[in-house]
Amino acid sequence: MTAGEALAHGAARLAHLPEPRREARLLLAHALGVTPAALFGGADLPLPPDAAAAFAAGLARRAAGTPLALITGSREFWSLDLLVSPVTLIPRADSETLIEAALATAPASTGRILDLGTGTGCLLLAALSEFPSAWGLGIDRVPAAAALARANAARTGLAGRAAFLCADWAAPLAGRFDLILSNPPYIETAAIPGLMPEVARHEPASALDGGADGLAAYRALLPALPGLLAPGGIAILELGAGQAPAVAGLAEAAGFLPSFRADLAGIERALILRPG
Ligand code: GLN
Image (cartoon, rainbow, N blue to C red; front, side):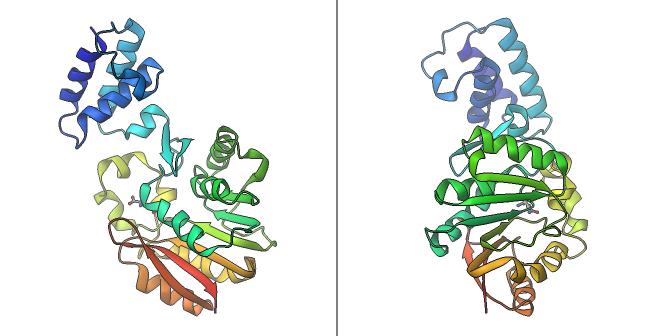
């Protein structure tokens, strides 16, 4: 079998997905251990048996609903190539809205950044890549997530400016930060089984479940934030669709002036908080 034949077979196998050919190409590149770009022009090359077997196994997992990133083991976020695992949320393009909001609001001199519920480390590492004089701390309650984020800091060359702690939100922190980022779990518990099976079955409840009304994490986080912000500091939290009014109310009660930034779908995705 040639690479081109394998790609055609893979795309047919994934025909129920929106982008079968692209996904098949990424799986084939992963099976061969090459970049997707390296496949262009290589359609006539024979597929080595071990790569053919790895491709078949990846296709079977993808056809059964495993997220592509969990098969290839990585996902791009803000142009950083990050390792992923089943213990954290897979980075989403929606969350890049928080980095856009940070660039629009935080001074270039931003020195200390905190990421609460860091997961893969995507928000912290993207922010560190944009604020070159900043130092950052990522916190996650799940030990394997803190370890994954640490590995991603090393992988992206940012380990010298990033530290990671395993803790419950901001409980152990006393320091002051110029920029606080968080993508907390915000899905209503009862809505989780109805999410896309890829999400509901393959991503951890610890990163999704926001309690009965989806707002439990904001109730826990918001009162702690004023004590963690340096003078002039800004906190930016991710929101689920439709949550802006409710979370803005909680933020005002905690003494903040809230504003929003929409994602590419027009959903108010980032809540920007300055002390009132
Ligand atoms: N955006 C994710 C989803 O739609 C949820 C992320 C979260 O709960 N923080 O599945």
